Length: 231
Image 1 (tube, helix red, strand yellow):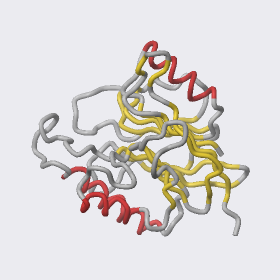
Image 2 (cartoon, helix red, strand yellow):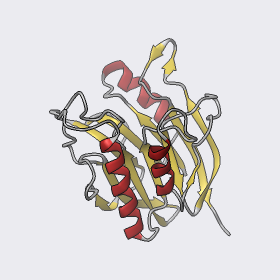
Image 3 (cartoon, helix red, strand yellow):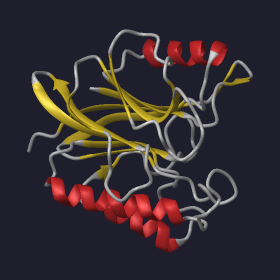
Image 4 (tube, one colour):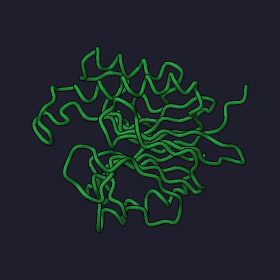
């Protein structure tokens, strides 16, 4: 299975076209796209979106989505007690077996601090989301194989507070974060991650957000080729 993560930065027009060329030129099975317009995907497939309300006055924009070659089942859009509009999960087919995938867009440290609702403290929404995600995972007893998306932290820790970093790492205590450290082909850390269980990585690398001197988005693209971990 090949999984790609791309924060599209609300791409449209030429940026949208070029990002689609890169993503689908790699023949992915799953795409987790964050900060995405409703009509972003230009290849036929099955798409599920987070709730549209993430606290800002927008229309036709979603914080996180999942695209699959195969249909989705048991779709959930709500993460209880978390900031709204930043969660999507479902189950899709992989070689005849159902796999559970969670797409996230964890709020950045200044969400609703100086923009949006302007009623939060720095890191407040970020921590609230992580706490809610941890509770959700504890309640689902390991049925989800992948957690992917924009997590707004580098792993290992770089500049974020120790307490914030430790909370994120605790969420993945039963998962393997295969995007930690400097990514191959980029030689730098990313804030978009893939955490998995019952699978292992064959190859993980990044694709620069800058192509032919054009910045397509503000995040580098993450690509992972994975297989079942047979023990």
